[in-house]
Image (cartoon, rainbow, N blue to C red; front, side, top):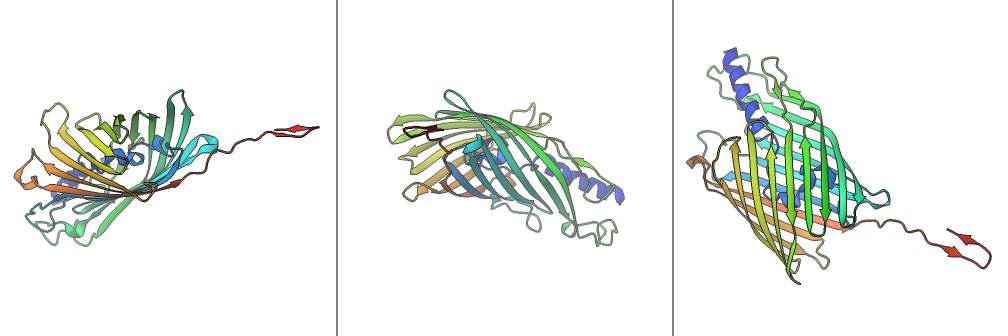
Length: 328
C-alpha cells in the first residue's frame, strides 16, 4: 500500500511540476510581469493593475468528481520609480488542479537603462511558492489506508526567486526570464516522495506596426521550456482600432521536447479600452482545443480586467537666476 501511495504522489507531483507547474494564460502579452520581473515599471507613464481569471477545459466530462480541470487567477501590480530609473511590482497567483493548489507570491524590482531608442531592463523577483495537496479528495483502494485516511491537507511553503532581462521601445520588445531559480524541493509533508520545482525559461517578443493613423498590428510570440522535456510555443497577432477596440488570433503548441504534435489550440482574443483616457481595459480569450484526446476537446475561457493611473513624473531641476546670485 505504501508503494501505491508513493506512486500516486509521484504522478500528481510530476503533473504539477511539468504540465501545470506555472499557470498558463492566453493573454500573455498583457500579463508580462507574471512572466518576467524586468517588466516591473517598464512603462514610465503609468502605474498598472491587472487581474486575469482562467477556466480551462470548460465542458470537460470527468469520470468522477470534478475531473480536476485547472482554474487559474493572477493579480499583478506594476509601478515605475522614474526618479531612480527603476520599477517595482508584485504578483499573486492561485492555481487549482484537482486535489492540488498552488499559491505564488512574488515581489519584483527592475532597473531600467535608457538607450537611444528604448530601454534595457534588468529585473529580479523574490517571494514564496506554496503547494497544497488535499488527501481527502483521493480515492484509495482501501478507505482505511493509514497513509491517506485522516491526513487532510498537506501544505508546504518554500522561498522562490526569478531573474529577467528585457528590451522595449515604441516598436519592439524582447525579454528572457528564468523562474524557480533555486529549484526548491517539495515533499508535501512526507518522506515517501520528493519533487523538485524545475526552472522554467520564457522567451517573449513582439512588434508594433502602424498600418494607418487609427489601426495598429501587434504580432508577438512566446516560448516556454524547462530545457528538459516540455516546451510550449505560442504565436499571436492582435489588431487595435483607434486604441479602443482589440481583436486577435493566437495559436499554441505544447509537446514534449523532440516531438511534433502540431497546433493544439486556436485562440480568439477580444478587448475593449474604456474611459476617456483608455485607463480601464477588459479582455477575453477563448481557446478551442484542436489536437487532443476527445475528453479534452473542449474550450477554455479567460477574462482580463486592467486599470492604470498616471505615474509620478521624474523630478525636474530648475535654474533660478537673480541679479546677484545663481542657484541650481
